[in-house]
Structures are given as C-alpha cells and as structure tokens.
Length: 279
Length: 279
Image 1 (cartoon, each protein chain N blue to C red):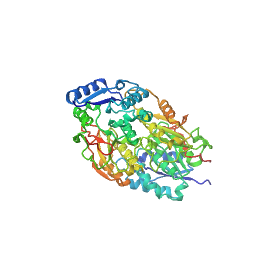
Image 2 (cartoon, rainbow over the protein chains, first blue to last red):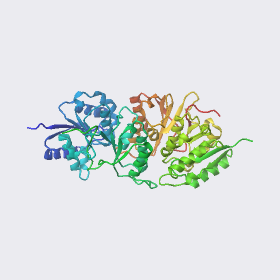
Image 3 (cartoon, rainbow over the protein chains, first blue to last red):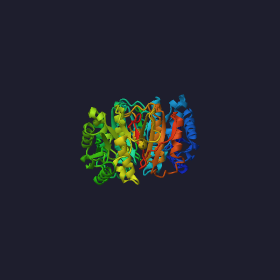
Image 4 (cartoon, one colour):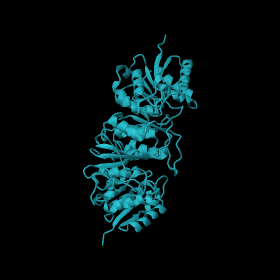
C-alpha cells in the first residue's frame, strides 16, 4: 500500500471560503486519492481583511508546519496578510517544519521568501486551492496535487532545470521584502516575476525597485511571467511589460532571459525554489 | 534693491500642463514678485506616461540644478517617473547644484531622497506648482513661494524644530527606495509619512515594509501625515491608518510620535530634510 501524502491547508492572508475548500477536497478525493487534504479551521475565520486575527493565522501555520504527520503546507489563497504572520511565525518552526514542502504564490510569497531565507529546501511557487475558482482552475489544483504527491516534471515551469537555481515571486510582493530580514539571498538564481491588477506605471516602478537593489543584481537573470488584468494607464504608458523589463535589464545589467510560464491564472506552473527536487 | 530669488521648474515625472504653469507664474508675479519663476520647456513635453523621454527629463533637471544663476529647483508635479531620472542625473550634479534648494513631494520624493543621500542640504518636502489646481491650491503655492524666498517659519510643518532632524515621504515612494542607492540614512530622523489613493491593505503592507527594514528602524520615530482618497477596502479593513501605524510601531519598536501636517492636499506644510534652515 502506498503511503498517502498529507497536506495541511492554512490561510495566512485572506479567508478561504469553505465552499471553495470543499470543491478542492472533492477534486482531490476523486482524482488524486494519494493526497489527503486537511483544511485547518482557521481558513474560514474572519477578522476584517484577514482569515482571523494575526495570532490565529500565526498559530495555524506553525501548528501544521511543526506537525511531523504532515508532508506539506499548502497556502489556501493569497489576498493579503502573510507579512503580518511571517516575522512572528518563522522563529517558532522546528525540524519537522524544515523537512516539509510549502506551496503557494502571490501574497504567500512573503512566507516562501522567509522560509527560503532560513534555508528551507521544500519551498515552491505554484497554484493554491483558491485557484479552483478560475477558468480552468481544476487543472491548476490538479497540477499542485501532482506536484505535492510526486514532483512530476510536467508540473514544473519549463525552464526549470536541475543545474540552475530558480525562484518566483509576484513583483510587488518581492519589492516589499527588499531590505527586510525576509529577503532571501538570490545570488545566481533565475528570478521569475509575475504581476496582476497593477497599472503599467506601477509595474515600471516595482521593476525599478527590484532591479535597483544591489542584492538583487546578483541574480543570474530575470524571466518575465504573465502580467494580467492591467488597468488602463492614463495616458497610455506606451510600453509593454516586456519593454519595461528590458529597460530595467539595460539599466541594471541583469540579463533578461525571456518569458516564464507563471502568472495569476490556471496555467501557472510550479517553480521549486533553489534547484528542483527529484521524484 | 532686494535680489530676486530665481526658481527653475522641471518635471521629472508627469507633464505639467502649460495652463497650470501659467497660473502659478501669474500668482507669483502678483503676490510674490521677489520670486522669479522659470518654467523649463521640458515640463510640457509628452512621451507616454512621462513629461518627455527619460533623456530629456534628465537633461532639464541637470541643466537647472547645475546653473548657478538659479537658487532653487522646484518640481512641477508628481505623477510618476522620477525613478527613471535619478540614477542617471545625480552623478552629473556639480557644486552649484549642491548649494540649491529642491522642493517637491510625492513621486519627486525619489529625487529628494537621492539628493539627501548624497549630502545635499537644501532638500525639502512641500507643495508643487500643480497643487494650484487643488481646492485652496493658491495658498499651497504661495506657501512654497514664501519658503523658497525667505524660509518663513509659518510655512513649516509644526513639529519641525531646529534641534531635531526630519524627513517626509509618500509611503510607497519611500518603500520603493529601500535597498537601493537612493535610500538615505535616516538614523535619528523623525520620519513623516503620508499616502493618497492607496487601499488600506496596501498602506498596511507598505508600513510593514518600511518598518521592517533594519536601516529604517534607526529613525527617531514616525509621524503620520494624512492618508486621503483611500478606496473602499473589500471587506472593510477594520483598522484606521492610525491603528495600522501603531501596530507596526509595536512590531518594529519605532516610536509613533503622532500626526504630521502633510499630505496630498493644499494644507501640506513644508518639511526641510535634516535640521530646518534659518532665514
């Protein structure tokens, strides 16, 4: 009998609707019974913008991360709030936490960054349970489940290769970590960046910030993920996101390596932080 | 005969409409003839989002800053674009530039920061020509003209005192400078922060970033300027901007010193960087 992979879902930012969690649980049971999902009750708590008070979100994350009976922590959704969790939670993690997989993106990138900065090896950027509500979202969730259970190569962003370290972030999330203790050392990493729902001028400003940091300038290069749902710029910005990243590549000297198959959408592929794991 | 103060207006970010510049020139001639304004033609250039191409904005700023016949550089308006000017322009500044006053806020804070980081003594956060279009905007512009001509004490933010260094920034602008060479050393400064048109969750995130930086934690304290035109948060954030700054004050150990009389409005008072100048 194959041992099942136990995955605990927590929501360090915004609340995960119980009906959405239920859809994910049903999909997992039907298509990937090798994965056992546990939805922490904290996911459906509510406190203003957040899935419960800071203390509850910190406690739920630490509880699952430190529990050796779980193989992975899966962040339920993004939204906003992980930065209120990370600084207090990370020092509480134990050795069991260090051996786990952590999967998420967007706002959850704050925790991915902080974990990776502390040397955790199982950190990955990829789909979350809430993605099931997207067009084609079942496939995004299935991709995450396949990654969590057996690290299948076809779940990975295509440029990910064993010989080259990589990371992936939402642009503004990485920007807002620069200079804090959560910023990981990205020397010699391929840095993949995606964005959603930001004006083009803000994408430009965020890439100024990211590429203007001497620490970030030690990356091997930047790959540009999808920039989606960009509101109309007034006046028209006159440059695409590719123009923008090429501009800042020229200013900073960071090589631009082309596109990355990541973004706030159902096609979002998985980027393990560091060198990719083997099955 | 009193020597007139010569002030050159440039637009390192967004275009300054010629009719707006004309209103400011008329007001200055009528109420403050001791100030001679020169509106650089670059102000009305247009290139996508910007007041002309990067090279034109860099050239105009450097031209006025380096010209010893001008006493001050006044940034025409904010918008966005100073970060595309600063890195190239600042190394070109000469000794005449070092003796000048620089006045502006919002996006222009990128240049204020970079100038102050290079030891310029005449940097100040305060009204710009484009503020004349605000309700009560004549008084904002008149305040700037009085400051530029004679540093009158009643133009200053009330907490500004000779014994204590201060700076002021738009929150997201300061956030996007952290970790770059434009970030000034703010050790022992009172840091005044204001914001406009940002969701409350973003104000929270930006204050996480600012207060999470070990370099920023060396400030003497934070004063909170006005946070205006905040779009509705969905769901309601449940905390005011004062709650938020007090939260991050508690996390970071940076003292919260109360409100500051600055903001994206006509009441915006002037904050000279460092210790305030004397008349």
